[in-house]
Length: 264
Length: 281
Image (cartoon, rainbow over the protein chains, first blue to last red):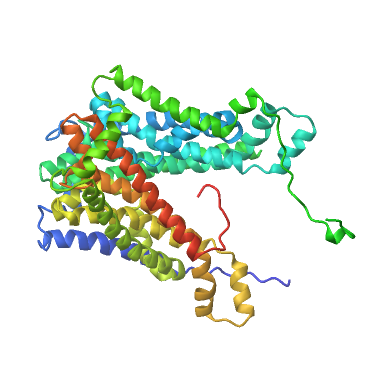
C-alpha cells in the first residue's frame, strides 16, 4: 500500500488552553470581588450570581416576578415581533426586488424609516401604546423588518439574469418568473437575514425593556441598577446572553432543515 | 463609423424608448417615488391634524418648525448643533476605541492558534450579550457621565470589529498563500502581502455594522440618563409630551446616521478601491 495511516496528533495545548482561560477568567472574577479590589457594591461575584439565580427561581421579590416570568415575557415579545417582521418583511422585500410599481411605492417610505435606530421610537411608542407588550413588539418589529426586507430585495436583485432571459425566451409571464426563478434564487439571502434580524431584535428588546417595561429580562437589569444590586444586573445580562444564544441555535437548526429541504 | 473588420466593431448600448403614455408615466419608478413620498407626508399630516392618535403626533410642518427653532434656541445650555456634537463626540471616541482594540485582537486571533485558544472562549461568553444590556452595569461602574456612554459604545463596536477581522482572515482563499510561498515568501510576507489586504473589505463591513450599532447604543445610553445629546432631546420631548420635539430628534438622528455610514463607505472606497460590490453587506 502506498498509503500510510497517519495518526492524527491531538494538539493538547490547544485543547487545554481554552479551559485554563475560562478558569482564570471566572477565578479572577471571583477573586477580585472576594478580596474587595472592586467593592461588591459595583460588581457581583459569580457565586453570588448563581445564588441569586437559585433564589429567583421561586422568590418574586424584590422586583415583582420570578425569573421564569421575566424570561417568558421577553421571549414572547421577541418571538411575536420576529414572526410579524418575517411574514411582512420577506414578501415586501421580494416584491420590491421584482415589481417596479411596488418598489416605487414602498421604497421612499422604507428609506425614510431605515436609518432611524429602532431605539429612537421608544418615546413615540410610549405615547401610542403605553408600556404594555405592544409598544415593545412595535420596536422589535421595526428592528426586524429592515434586515428581512433588505436581504430579500438583494436576493431577488442577485438572480442570475441569464435565467430570467431564458424564461422570457420561453414565454414565461412576469409572475411566473417571479415565483419560479426569483424567489428560489433569493432564498439563501432570506435565510441569511434570519440570524441578522434575530440578533438585531434581541438587542432592541433589551433596550425597549430597559426604558419601558414592568416585566422582562431588560427590566430585571434595570431594577438591579435601581436597587443597587449588581448580582441582579449580572444575572439579567447572563440570562439575556443565554436566551439570545439559545434562540440563535434554534433558528440555525430550522435554517438547516429548510435549506436541506430546498436543495433536495 | 464604418467598421472594416470584426475587430473594429464596438458594442454600443442601445436605449429602448418606450412610447410616452399615461400608463408609462404612472408606473415609472421615479414618478412613483414622488407620489409615495407626498402620500406619506399627507397621510402623516392628516393623521396628526385629525388627532386620530390623540395629541401624540405632530404634523410634518410642526416638526420642521420645531427643528428650525431648536437651531437658534438653547435647550439645557446647548443649541441643536451642540447636542449633535455631544452625541457625535461620544460615538467617535467609543467607536475609535472599539476599532482600535477589536481589529488587532481579531487579526491576532485569526493568525495565531494559541491567542485564539485563550481569547475565543471568553469572547464567546460575551458575544451573545447585547451591548445595551451593559448600560446598567456601566452606570454602576462609571456613573452617568461621559465614561459610561463611551464604554457602551466601545462594547458595541468592539464585537463586530473583532468578529469581522477574525472571519475576514479565515475566509481568505488558501491559494493566495500558495502563490506567496511559491514566490519564496516567508510567514511575514504571507501576513503583510495577503492576509491584511484580503481582510480589508470584511473589516470595513465590520466598521459599517459597528457604526450603526454605535448609534443604537448612544441613543439607548442617552435615553437612560444624560443631559445632552440627541437621545436627550427625544426624552425631553417625551417628558414634556411634545411629539414635535421627539420627531424632530428622530429626523436629525436619521440624517446624522446616514452621513456617518456614507463617510465609512467613502473611506472604504478610498482604502480598497479593488473591492467589488458585494450585495447584502
